[in-house]
Image (cartoon, rainbow, N blue to C red; front, side, top):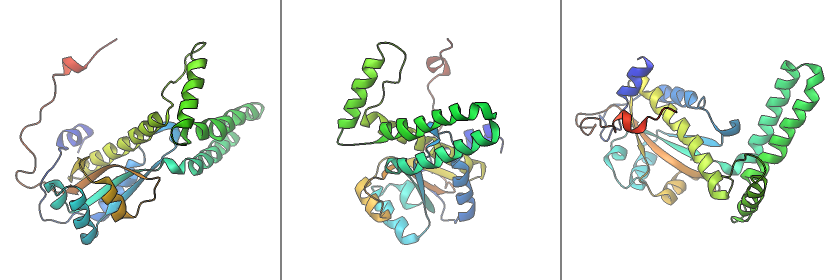
Length: 240
């Protein structure tokens, strides 16, 4: 498919054929999902590709028994991992250090390296750290003071940073669904689920959070509910 064809082909599918899909193709679509843009390239996500029939049944129960889950051939659980921020910061600092050494003139390397060391060594740890909301409150106080003198990002509370991580994961999920559409497969992003039960089924650590569960398969007759409806483009498009 062309990109436009894949976009129009993708529909939220609530009923799938009892027909297997290729796990390797689904895995490849998840590899493509890692190419999605994400905040500061932190990649605070994990993808749980569920193919085991017993686990699928348990997840279908956690998804409140909706048909999109009970008829799914496979599922992918998109998980945020803000608790891994220190590991990701170290990886990104190593990457940027190598990039500077490879691509920057020698006379500029020291200053550029200091900027990345500040960003991934100080700023990111401060932004992503959590402590019962207290650190978020401290960050809000700091940015409100600094904001009196220059432009600054104000969304730095612990709740704000949680939103950032979930937005990033959702971009990966959308990329995955479009990749699946290009393969001729169908998906349905589900937000209605028992997150505690799903976490237990997948044995996720305490710091992990489920962003969404995406069911996968080939649409059956009646699997797509009616014609697509979108608000008129003129109502949502604003050229400035």
